Figure 1 (tube, one colour):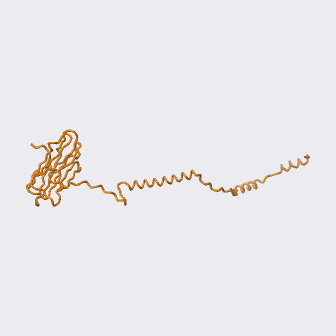
Figure 2 (cartoon, one colour; figure 1 turned 90 degrees about the horizontal axis):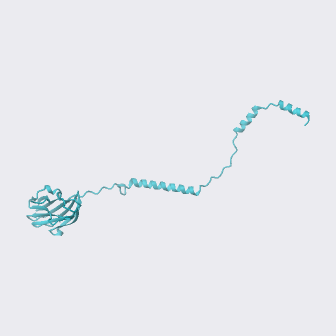
Length: 233
């Protein structure tokens, strides 16, 4: 390069003044412009394990909802949403608390005793009723307190079995034996025995709470007697 050209270049460079306003405007226009569009990618399909996990979560939700519904409606209710009533307690057909009743009334007389053949493991409570005239109705009840491991082993009566409806059940803390004369049957005059048998824990059992009652009908005359099984004399 010759000396003359070099001087001209230096002179042109020294005299150049850049247009800052135009440069800034160009930069601003470039920044304000929309960015170049990016190529959209197709959506990725979920991996198989994600689909399985999602299905498991849905099933768990359904099961949880079902369990909650059962918890809310299943307890103490039957179909239709109605609450089932508790079964009624048994009601005694005959009078209770015989120890406070008289042993004799009208044509009926009674007595109660623990059978002398009872032993350390087994006992029998006997009730005798004496009718002065025929009875057209009779209900006898023996109550044995449920103490000392009492368990029924049977019962009997001296009158014909087919004349009575008999039962043995636990009611209100007692083992209750009950005999009821059937409709159309009668009891002849005389002394008749009713007995309830039971096992108990080894030893002498306390019969102080045991009692009996007897209700009779003699041609329209009502009689009610009762007592306990305490030793006599």
